[in-house]
Amino acid sequence: MDGVLQTMKINLKDITLRYFNARFLCYWSIVWAVGVMAISPVVNYVTPLLNSGYNSQWTPDILYRLNMYWHGGIFLPWVIVLLTVVYVVIGLDSMKGVLGRLVRIFLFGFGFFAVPLAGIGGIFNVTDKFAWGIPHLLEYPGFAVLDLASVAIMISLIVYPRLSGKGYRKMGLPFYVLLLCVIGSFIAAMLGYVAAYITVSGPSPPIVSHYINSTMYPVLGYYNSTAVITFAQNVVGSHSHAMLPILMAGIVVLVAIVCGYDVWSKGQKIISSIGFLTMFGSVIAVLGIYLASGIGNYQVPTLFASGPNGVAQDDIITGVVGLGALFVLVALLLASGKKGGNGHTIKDPLFASVVIAWIIIYLVIPVNGFYINFNEAFYSGAGSAFDDAYTRFHQDYAFFLLPILVTTFLIFEMFEISGIKRKRVGYLYISGEIIIFVLGEIYSMVTLNPYVLYGAGFGGALVAVGALMGARALNKTGFENNQLGSERSQ
Image (cartoon, rainbow, N blue to C red; front, side):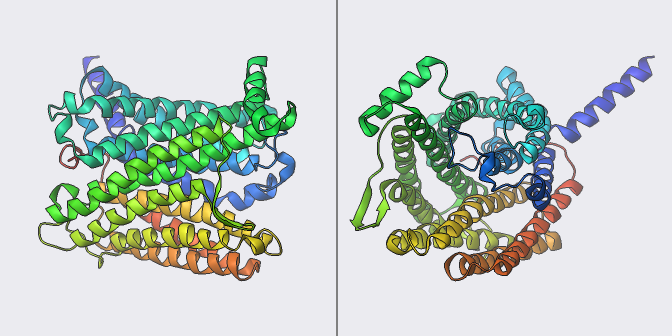
């Protein structure tokens, strides 16, 4: 009997090590995210992603179906992975006691189940009434787990300098920018819950409708359902517009840490510090403007206006986040391939894919976006179809796919995927992201020919194959916990 119990203990330990740790959760999340993306054509046939008939009466201009698909199928596993990366590179895996156990339970234990629940829910969540509301309900526990894990990571980051004995002064600027990004993304998530509540439940109980009407009255001058719709859609827009640049800023910090920030030269750290300080200030500004315009009644003004042309103030502020990231990119490139630097080189295709992704993000979002803003007379009139195409292109590609690609680089770098597998993943990433960029630009700016879009889809398939290839290599490296955190957190 004792032998049987001992065998059960060993098996339980093996299962725990294999399935409830950082490495496996990253592998698990990648496979699910790619799988959900792969079946999107079938999903679109069964419950069309862009069918406005599935929209809520309180958010009629928001594509409810597409939002739920992205949130459950792609967004949740992405953020789960980002939290896992933070957990490893900062050194939270060394935390003992109750807090350390809670982080591991919420992130690795519950996160294991949250990813498929949210993925399945995201695929079939058409409305809260579709299929007896089961798909809609499946996403709730997934995002509850994400919130619990986020809070646990946030608290861990706050107390880690003291518990680790390093002290708050020695943590370095990247640590505090990352902490702000974690806090900021959580605040942005709360905006999403406000929007989700109104989308599903409407302006009830009376205290909600009273707040909405009293808030929107100075802007609209009347109380009715239009005020609720305006408020709800403002919150949805503020949620997504705040969340994505804040997450991207956090990814920039993680890239710097993983790529050897602690061994960069003094000059490289000075350059990157300009970027980190710029991102820190602009993330605070992003939170301020989107809280004011989301749950308040602040109307974002258009700057440099000339007739219908001009740039929205919030676009300028989020562009400043990108400006800060540009300084970090320069420091990263200066450090690459040099003795005493980060050991990376542009000749490494996986590292090169990150640099290319970084550049493409600038080309697609600020460069292309500002061009459209200053030619709004055309894009809001005769060229409105191109504007719609660009909106989808820059959201799906520059705000989602490319940051997710960089996130997978962080995973593969943390767990030291190397050799021919690393090169193959890198080349697939480079090929895919360039194909998508070129054909996506042609489709959204020159022609709306669907065959061009199909070609861009082929580029997306190359990126997906690269991600799966990297995940398979991750799978084969073993699943024991990787103790990388403490040596990379400075």
